[in-house]
Image (cartoon, rainbow over all chains, first blue to last red):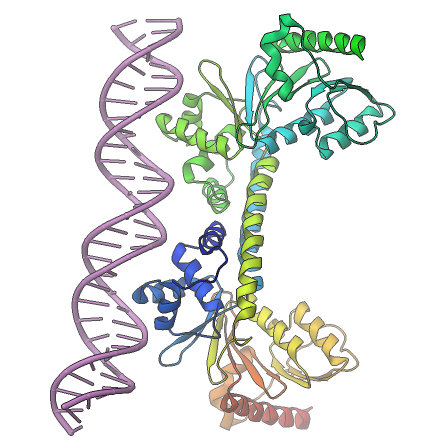
Amino acid sequence: MKLPSENPVRVTECLKSLGLTKYEARVYVALLKVASATASEIHEISGVPRASVYTVIDQLLDKGLVSVSQSAPKRFAAFSPEDAITKLMDHIEMDAKYARDTLSLIYRERMRPGLGSEELIWNIYGIETIKKKLTDLISSAKHRIRIIAHPQILSPDVKQKLTTMADHLGVEIITPQWTGEIPIKMNVYIIQHPEIPKELDTAKEMMAGGVCIIDGRCVMVIVGVGEEDAVALFSESEGFVRFFVRYYTLIFDWAKKTG
Amino acid sequence: MKLPSENPVRVTECLKSLGLTKYEARVYVALLKVASATASEIHEISGVPRASVYTVIDQLLDKGLVSVSQSAPKRFAAFSPEDAITKLMDHIEMDAKYARDTLSLIYRERMRPGLGSEELIWNIYGIETIKKKLTDLISSAKHRIRIIAHPQILSPDVKQKLTTMADHLGVEIITPQWTGEIPIKMNVYIIQHPEIPKELDTAKEMMAGGVCIIDGRCVMVIVGVGEEDAVALFSESEGFVRFFVRYYTLIFDWAKKTG
DNA sequence: TAAATGTTGTTATAACAATAACAACAAGTG
DNA sequence: CACTTGTTGTTATTGTTATAACAACATTTA
C-alpha cells in the first residue's frame, strides 16, 4: 500500500468513524490519487485484494463517493473529498438530529431532572465533561456561589459564566491565582501558597482541583485534573454539602485572616 | 425491551451511526427514562443482559455519556441527550475535518482534475449527486450552456446558478415547464407537450431527465430521475458531445419552429 | 494459427475481529 | 437459605477482511 506521508492509519480511522469500512476507506483514498483507475490499479495502489475491489466499489457507489465508467475494463473515479465528506456528514447529522429530538422527548418525560437521587454521590469523568457540568451548575445557581479553585479549573467559559452570575447573586472565589481583571461584583481571594490547617490534612489533595458550592444545595468537588485522570464528585446529599460548606467556611475565614 | 412508541430500532440505528454499539445505545436510552438505575434495573428496562450491563456502562463512562454513583449497589445516570449527542458529534466532526484536510491535499496533488479520461463515459448515481454535479458543471462553463430539462432537474440551486451564469455567457433552456419568472438574460423555450420527430424515437426517454451541454466540451445526460433509479451519464468524449450537440440542435430548431 | 499466458469480473470460502448472548462463580445481604 | 451484585469467562453471531477458484475474454508467444 503506497500512501503518502500523512498518517495513512489515522485518515483511515477517521473515515471509519464517518461510516466507511477499512477497505472502503483505502479504496477511496487510492482513487483520490489518480484521475481514474481499473480494479487492478486500485488493488496496486491501495493493497486491497483485487477480487475484493469490485465489492468495495459497489459499496462506494451506493454511498455516492465514486463514479464508474462501463468501459472494458471498467474504470472508476472518486468524487472530491469535500463533496464526499459533506455527503457522509450530512447523513450522520440527520441521524444525530433524529436521535437528539427523540431522546430529548424521552428525557423530558422522566420523573426528575438532574443527576438523580439526592443522597447519592456521582462520579464525573473527563476534564471537558467536568467543565461542562461546572458551567451548568453555575448557571443553575439561585442565591450564592462559593468556589475554591485551582486556576486550571477556571477556564474562560467558567470565568465568563461566573462574571455573568455575579451581577445578580453572590460569587466568592478562593484561588491561588487569578489571571486578568477581577470583575467588580465578584469577591476573589487570592492565596499564593495556601497552608491548610493541620486538622484538615486529609483533605489536602482537594486543593489540586476545587470545590464549588451552589446555593448550599449541592457541591461539586474536583479531585483529579489531568487529561486522563480528571474526576469530580457531585452530590446534593445534605451530609456531603454540609461537610464541604464547613470546609469552605474554614478556608474562607482563614483566607480572610491571612490575606 | 420496553421502549416507548417512537421507533426504538431507528433511534438505536442513529446512535450506532454516531459510534455507539447496539448495547450501548440501548443502555443509554434506558437510563434516559429514569433519574438513576442499578444494573438490574437497566437490564429490565433495556433488555440488555444484566452481566453485560457493567461492561457497557464502562464503555459509556469512557464516552462521557453517563455517570456512576459508587453506592451499593452502584447506581448510574445518563447525561442529557443534548450534551451526549453534542459530545459524540464533536468527535466525529474532528475526524471529518482531519479527513477533509488530509484528503484534499492528496486530491490536489493528483494529475488532473475532473472525472478522468476524456474518452470515458461516467455513470453518476443518486439524484442529489446528480444535481450537485450539474451545478458544478454549470459553474465551470466558460462560453455557453445549453440545456434540455425536465422541470424536476431544475432545482432552485440549479436555477440560481444558471441565472448567475446567464449574466456573462449564453444560457439556453428548453423545458416543458418553467415556474417563476424567466430571468432577463436567459433564453427559455417552453414546450408543453413536446412531440419528438419519429426519427429520434429511440431517444424519447431522454426527455424524462435532461441533457446539459457545457461549452460544446462536455455533456451530462440525465436518464432516470426517481429517488432510487436516478442515473446520469457524463462525458467529455468528442463523439459523445457531438452526438448530443446534434440532438440538441435538432430539438432546438424544432422548438423554435413550433413555438 | 493455435496454444499459452494474462486480465477481468464474479462467486464462494475461510479467517478474523468485534459485538451480542449466555454461563458460572464468589461475595455480600436479608 | 435465597437472592442480588459484580466479575469473569465462554459461546454464538455478524460483518469485514482475506483468499481461492473459475469462466470468459484479451493479449502474447511460438
